[in-house]
Length: 229
Length: 229
Image (cartoon, rainbow over all chains, first blue to last red; front, side):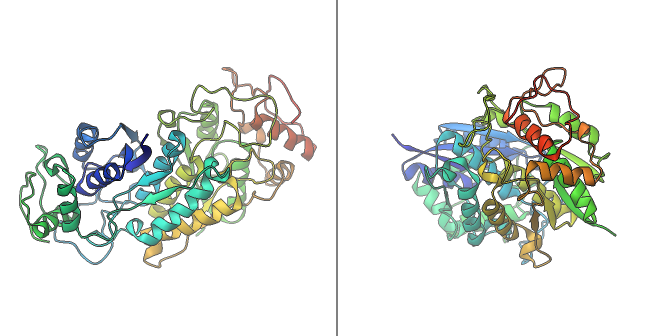
């Protein structure tokens, strides 16, 4: 029987590719998504529609409202920047988001008897979020192995898998295409139109478009504008 | 101006004492509680009613449903054990609970510009939960300082304060009494009657009753049965 892995799945390019990789590595993926009051609810609609199509055995959506905490353009009235990817950590950073996400994934993994958690973080073509860096992931893994009953009882060791961490966006997309990922069924934009077209100008769109350009493939989703990075 | 601290506050003896300690140490406490589908919703009612009475400047209740994840007597149909505190990690352990709680506290702290988080974990008179041990807290703190924008930018270092970690339950209660805590306004029972009386038999009641006995004080809350540990 395949080993179960919990895969963080947002419906975007990275997490969808990550789900495909977990499957290709022989895991039975259990996808987990989060409805956290994000501006781009469209990603969640895409995630709900496609998790099982992309091979998830189960799909859990955990709901909470980070708008109560705020502090990010994705969860408050701060505007999503559209003037290109800068060098600073941008206002789309959501305080402690990956830490919160991984913590629910860890709890679910423990209940499922799984020891493998996949997260599609990337430290090359990314927005500079601190909770995407390898040193953060290593520290999280150490903490997870002290946090849990299963680990405390010596019944196994949790691994946080980050198969995309050292890939460019173009490499991620080529890898996904090789695994049969249909990127038309993904969503990346932070600020889509009500009709679901990607804005083409937010960091997430810019990084995605750059990736498709590098991969030499046309991005199959609809855009209002197709920007450069 | 007093420095803001985020204090994890459940409405029970430990977190209420912790809130009083944070105030006594000169912090302006922002209390955070969690409605996570716990069997003992009574603790949340108590927390909502009393956070500001106990000196919290703000009280945030974050809601999510861990019953979707399960794996604990507190969030599923597993029975709460009432036959005394054992040596094993009990079925009331909630997978990754303190990790999830601290992660929301960390996000809120970052938005508030606070660097101090108080959690009333205790490694002496406790149920053996792995996420109450000092080594877990140290690992969490390390991770938190890599997870966040504020820390990544070198604007400060997060500290997880655990003022109760090496105290017995009796010492905790004596300390709280010294700080003016009214323990009649706290709730600990995992399985209270609909009328709000504590069962007196679950681990949480047993540890609480043992603490009051050690402190030589009568516990002011109502019990169905007053057990020994």
